[in-house]
Figure 1 (cartoon, helix red, strand yellow):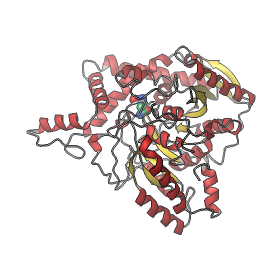
Figure 2: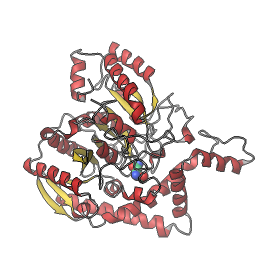
Figure 3: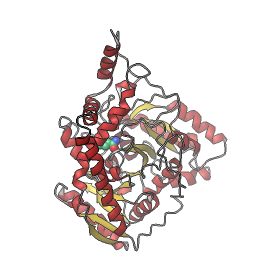
Length: 480
Ligand code: GLN
């Protein structure tokens, strides 16, 4: 069953080939068999999943009735621990469901558990987790990427047909690339942030992972839509993404930004991307080179804005209202400082310090305000590019998955890893990673970026590619 696409699973469910209970049991069995070696889940919800699948088998089916899904542990799930991979929230049982969780529930999906990630979604490797690092199913000594590494690894290993993720600066696209699955980060505002634990609110965007663009289209269609509980949610109709896929890219103009194909991109990954772009040309797309002159400002801009927003968002974790509280505080200050020092890991503390610094009265203009201005320049690059092209094609990462521990002691090396994913996040445009080949036996992703709210075009372009290639169907050895 885990070999089938979501469309095939929906069809098989409709003909009664198997029940939701059987499908759920199959995936729970794979989780039990494989997850110990991957550490892709923080919390398993086997019993609730079985009960829900059985109930769905008794009722009338919604669009995705009985299709299993994993939720990144950043989404609040009522009655289920929602840890954000932090010791701070290790004891937090969310009292309500996130908007995304509600919607996928309404669509009939069955949650199998909550996936591992970088603490508070800060990271590019899924090593910054209170629950230990996630492993890449293609090579267990390597990282799966981050921060949504548990979701990407689980989908790659066939532990679920789909999983949710969040992308603030690349956390869907980058792990999708490094694990060889398809992932989409929609336009900022497309998917509700209600109940999605905040990292950097002006950048955070929910999205999903699945094996193919078509499967992503099914899940995104169910996740997306206006939510009045999220003040930046956009009231705009959600197209029938899956229904509109026709795999036709003839006549599309695809831009290749010079700055993304410059030094730093590994030669083998470059060959993979060149072949993918040649495939688009064969399919009738026109490929042109474009200039995005402010690309190299993205890393410094992001690593001012994201920590600034994080330091403000994370102020709520103070040991008083919920979350970790230190033992025997002597006074209020001791309660705050020890609870936060014990509850947050090193990377989260680093971000809080940077954020508090760049927002402080003496440095606000020099850093935070400046970063807001350079953010605008980066967004302008996209405005100009999309006046000429329909889509942008680019690498997701400079190289395939690095080894666990390789960059753990060098935060700057880790940050530089995000160079190709940050610009789209800063501009708020939708982006995808599509499996495009291998380098040294590890997956390489092609990044596709579309204008604001053109998720349908993005998914269709990825679908066209997947109609004539089979990279997205490859399985890591041992997980067949
Ligand atoms: N790697 C980036 C960071 O560490 C992006 C993470 C994300 O998208 N959540 O902040």
